[in-house]
Length: 407
Image (cartoon, rainbow, N blue to C red; front, side, top):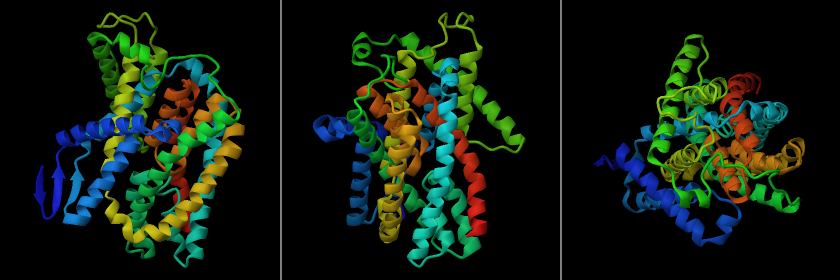
């Protein structure tokens, strides 16, 4: 940790340590504040937003900006999505076939609506239509990564000097709204239609109170880590192979697919060095998933530099308010009925709330908070990451150039 030119740089070790602290703070606050639990607000969101506000206050009062090294955070993301792949059974994948196609079709249509909305609002406010794209799928469904990738090109092509700032601001505010949207939507649907899981199943993320009391053996935990690393290694080779073919995907996507392939291709009785079966849907995998996702999201939210967004807050909040209303309406009146009006559909809606304005981890955190309160939904935890971690990036890569060329 060192202070250079008014910037306090936090190294990776301290960043992870603080991320864990933030997660515990969020848990304590959620335990003390009833409505946060009631509306299934994820614990890392509570803690992360609090700390990002505190860092903004530090900057406003001292002029010292806090910056974090986030390399370890990206490893946690790979861990999390690999656990989702390891938990994916062929039976669930087949069951999720039709819902997957339906959710994908809805999401693609929504992406077009999101861009049209952003362009229309910016045009009404007297801005450039191209700047509106930055408030659409570039930064919302696309997230910070897509915003960072496209903003320089859009800024140079259309003469928008603050394109990067607009993209980052939209992505940041969108992430906050997405984190707060999923839980309340799911609660509303579950209570209104009196929905419950069709059967009691083990959690994909997190463990039950009974499992906490029973405990997890050290070798079981280490076996789960080994399985994740095996899938990760194969995922890295798969990612490199696809990149040589001209298809560039985030590493966590290929690790997700690696987990799915190994889980469904290797027989349960396949001999392993640990002497145990493949750890699909075990408490160890669920525990690692919860720790990895929670710490990742806590680190992501606590590292937001809110003070950089103040000058753009007015017009961007106008765009995001309209985008938020549209996202909620589509979730309630299109996604929920189309996905079957059942408990799984309600959990999917929590995830779609995270996708629509935020990111894949936000969607998973929303669903995890709902599932741990009301019950597991394996179908939701399969189809939502497949849609938002794989297909969205491919569609966005075609959709953004189309809008830039025609608006």
